Image 1 (cartoon, rainbow, N blue to C red):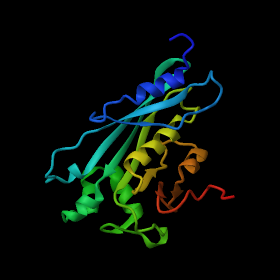
Image 2 (image 1 turned 90 degrees about the vertical axis):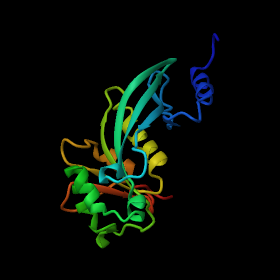
Image 3 (image 1 turned 120 degrees about the vertical axis):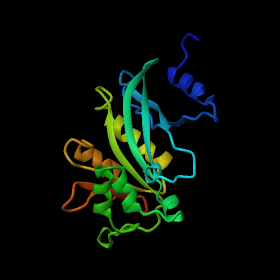
Amino acid sequence: MEGENPRISYLLQWLKFDPYSLSFRDLLPINMQHDASPYLSFVDFQLSAPAVPWNVEEFFVQEITGVLKAMNGDEEQDAGTVKLFKVQVSKAVNEGKNLRSICETHSEFLTGIYSSIFKDGCDTKRELRIEPTWNDLLVLWNYDVPEPFRSAGFVVQAFETAIAVFGAADLIAASMAIGELDLTIDEWKQLGFMKIAGTPIAYRDNGYTNPYEVVE
């Protein structure tokens, strides 16, 4: 329709999504900058899991890929991807599995995450003062977001949405090591991560508010 607002048109289209789709879709906070700037409109989350029972330790870790889409005027564009790991800690504990063994079996990456945060089994290190209210472990892994979307804040928006969808009640972790999750200091702060002294690992305790936010 001539003169139709593309943002309203998109929202109306999105509301017609199939609730039975195997692809998780969630609206992202819209970047309401100048109309000429692209803004992140939605992300399609793709996750594949083996059918239960999970007799193999690797099955307790699922890879999540978020495919970003952006609106620029009335044009929709591919804006990159973000990737995460979901470690099903609660289910593992209920089935008598060992979290350390699950992480070690999966990869050196998750082993490093485990060793930095946990001391034994599923107990977190006391000095980190992590609230014992979390269910699973959600790990931010990597991203591939080109310009101009990178500079427009898409990475933080996408990871925040992934946390809201898959880890609202989880313990969140990531690696700040060079060559892994290369975020700026401001982006780490926006995401609410705190670095663990003596390690490249950072974590976010969803039992607390963002420690960098100023409360008025």
